[in-house]
Length: 87
Image 1 (cartoon, rainbow, N blue to C red):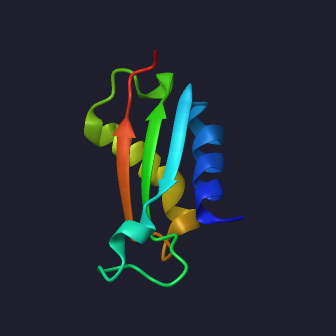
Image 2: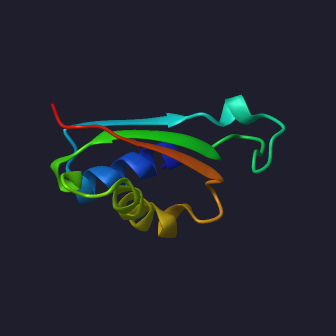
């Protein structure tokens, strides 16, 4: 299972999002810190889930990182997180 699939599976299992998009942006960071051959180093997550209602932005990001940190430690260099309102 690749890192994109792991991220999507973990976030879906924990937050049951109404919307989830996981984008591997590694190719945009060629030659930058943390980049490595084969990619899977830089990601963007766009997520909308009721779980985040009423939470501060910092709390939302911490909740997401708590879910992902164990599985992706050492693999992921950067993660951009966009928590969207549920429509």
